[in-house]
Structures are given as C-alpha cells and as structure tokens.
Length: 80
Image (cartoon, rainbow, N blue to C red):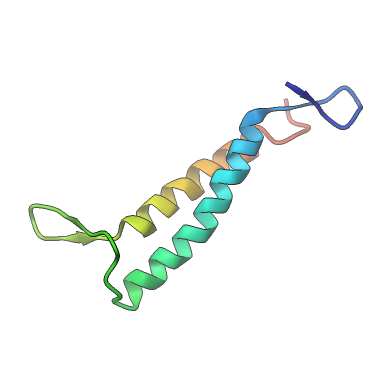
C-alpha cells in the first residue's frame, strides 16, 4: 500500500476505486433518471421478452453509486 499522511497510515487502493466508482455513479444516475422521466429514448434500450424497456444508464449508475458508496466508506482512511 502507498504511504498515507506521514503518520504511519496506509491508503488502500480500494478507497480510490470506490471514489472513482462513486463519481461515475453520481454522474450517470441523475442523467439516466432525467432521460427516463422526460421520455427521451435512450441510446441503448434493453428490451426484455415481456416488452419492458429498461434504461441501462440509470440502472448502471445506481449500481455504481451503491458499490462506490460501499467501498468509499469501508476503506476510507483512518478506519481499521
């Protein structure tokens, strides 16, 4: 692990992975929700056999937001 603040702390790579994933989720989720709620057709539609149109931008953004929040809080500096 990389050296932290000089006080003997280490920064985990998973904290940075969580921050990047959280940032992507914060960008994609509102854009996907806006696209869905304003009835703009998404660039990619997932067409399921029972004809439900899913908006992948929203759902992937929500998934990234969830994982990013988990990794950021679990591996934040100063918690062990």
